[in-house]
Structures are given as C-alpha cells and as structure tokens.
Amino acid sequence: MRSIKQKLAATLCCMLLLSGCGPLKIANTKGAGEPAPGTSSATSTPKETRPSDPVRTQGASSKETVPATKPEKTPKTQVTPPVKTKPLTGPKATGQTKPSPKESGDYGALSNEGDGWSYGYPTEWVREYDGYWQLTPGKLYLTMDLGYEMGFTEEILNTLREKNVKVTFFLTTEYLEERPDLVLRMLREGHKIGSHSTKHIPMTKLVGTDGAKLIENTRTWERAYKELTGQTSQLYRAPEGVFSKRGLAVLKDLGYRNIFWGAAYADWLEQQPTVEEAKKKLYPFVDSGDIVLLHPFQTNAKLLPEFIDHFRAKGYAFELIP
Image: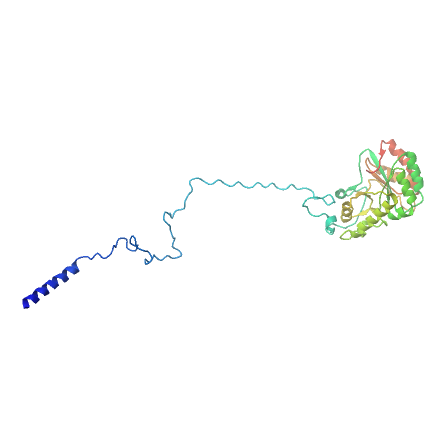
C-alpha cells in the first residue's frame, strides 16, 4: 500500500515539472498591437495622437511634393491708364463724369470775385467759359449795347443800312419792352440781337451759389425776346463789363457765348467827346479780328460813317458775330 502511494506521488511531481518548462501556445503573438488576421480591431487601442503630431496616411511623404511640370503663370491683366480729358461743364457733357454745375446746381466752388473787362489787358481764362473778344483776322465785328433808348438809334440804323454794315445789338429786357419797333427793325434789316440781361445788373450780384437768380434773370430775357420776335439768341454781353468765373459758368451751361470786346472807349459819358477826340481814343486800339463795342449815343451817331469808311479803306470787312 505504501509502495503504491509513493509511486503515485512520484508520477505527480514529474507532471508538474514538465508543465512549467515548455512554452504554451495559446494565441498568435506576431505583430503585437495589431489584430490577428480574421479578428476585429475594435478591442485594439490605437496610439494616442497629440494635436502637434502629424497624422500620415499610407503612401504620404513628409517632404513637399514637387509637380513634374511647372504650372503656367497666369498673365497679368493689362490695365490701360485712363486718358485725361478736360472735363465738360456744359449740357453736352456725357458719360460717367462729374456732374456739371448746371446738373448739380452747385456753383459755390467757383470764384464770384468780380472782374471788370479791359480790352487792353484781356483776361485769358474767359476762353474756358466761351468768352470772346477777337474772332477771324482781317474782319471787324461791330457791336452796340442798349440798356435804354437815347434817341440816336434810328439815325445809326439809317447809316448802317446806307453802308451795308450789319451789327450785333445787345439789349436789355426793358429795351425789348420799351422799343419793340426798333427791335423788329433791327432784325428786318439783317442785324443780330443778344442779351444784355433784364435790368442791366452785374452778374456777380445775381449769381449766388446756385446760380438761380442769374438763371431766372436770363430766362426772363429769353421769354420777352421770344414773345416779341419768335426767335432765340445764345449771345450774352455782361452788364457794365463785370463778370466772374461763377457767372460765366452759369451762362455757358445755359448755352450762351460770352461776348466781350477788343476795342472800345468811354463813349457813354454824359459829357460826350467830340468826333475828333473819339477817333483818337478809339482808332489806335482797333486790331484785326476785334469785336468793337460802341454805345448808340450822340458822338457815335456822328462818328459811325467815317469809322466804317476808315477801316474799310484799311482792308477790313465788317461781319456779324456768328
């Protein structure tokens, strides 16, 4: 009995020794951390990634990929610089330009400082506002201003008819209303008429900042002239020869040409000069192409025939302002 127990104990010890020495294959351990083929990855724990760690995909390279061919450069758009042109201020201005004073009703940016016209020292900038004092060389352009009737206009018209000379008369609204007979005779005999304002008020006193009073003054003259004659005129002579950039701009925007003069003398004075005195004051200052200003007063009524003959003899032709 004892011998049987001893044999069993020895056998058990041998079995225990054998079980602790050999490796036991329980699972495939190749690629630790990766799931075995055919098993799910749900239970595997991926490596933790931090925001600064780049996450690479299969086939990705840490180096910047350089394309096999250089991309074509996109050509720069050629921008043609705008052609600078002088801005228009009249009613013919078109396109997307700054509105003219007439359109905007704002003339405040232009100076209203009054200037007095001097034929000896013409103000060149008036050309910007359709201002004229000389026209075609070889010709003379006789003009007369009438704010009121002095009693010599009929005599002057008779002389002009005899000499076949045409004159541009600048009349006020008051003259149109007071002497319609003479106005209509002027037109019948081929003369021209322009505006000398409504009441002979200088434009600098009317224009304001928006031009409204000067515009209305001019429209009043236009209505009176159209009602009497059925005609219109786009010629303007500044009362007293006083003007400003602002006033001229308003008139230009209304379509007028501002007519000054290249020769004149103080013929409107109550103390009238003699004919010989007038010749000395006027003749030396008459140049080719001049617009000549006279007032239909006593001395000029006597001077006119000799004036026409004198300058015709010098080769000048008398023409109307176009």
